Length: 314
Image (cartoon, rainbow, N blue to C red; front, side, top):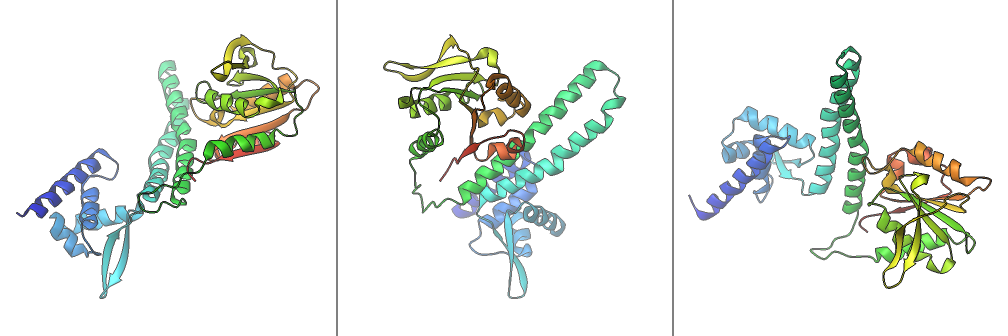
């Protein structure tokens, strides 16, 4: 066996091992690898010869690869031939959605349908937790798909990645959204613990010349409100000093709250706004990435005056 043939076989074996660990399976990924390593579209007969698989196994593998959008087909000389879809990000996004629909949703339905017949309280509690964990995957898959769509719409010539000045655009957009808020007003930020905090501190810096009285309310819990202050030689930071979030002129809601495990429910945010508003009608500003609010349905549950939607890649 020549050196090229040995390397080719090693690559196919490595891909097969990856497939063995995943949902597609060893044979499917080996067939995909066989097509990948060909310089032109290949026939089913050539795939059978290249993998040593039977006609039935190759046919089944090709069907799965087409369903996962990992290969395309064409006709050459009256014969159907296959070639690899090199948009792996697109294939991965579609595969993730299919995995959720085919595997996770049926589990949620099965558990939900049989929950009432479970008498053991501990078992029932465990099943409820599992159902909730499965449901949390839905917005995650949607957001992941949105990120992949954004990546695929970006121009990446060769190896050169075109960068944009994202932080400048981010802070400038926020400043513009806060332009109608009077100087010296009270601005309350609410977001998820740790995840949103650095973004809130960055946004506080962006409006540093407005003299705002700024506070951070983690996870929409008004009792935990803390002041945001300028610390010399450090910058704007959330400090361990309690503050009064009542009667704000603006409430800034960060998208991390809409993320599973990190946030809270939209009802908690609505309740916070109602509790601290008093007689005022504060401006409600949403700040999120990759349409997190829309994907989680928050745009229909919170009465935003404006929403900033930033993307991960441009």
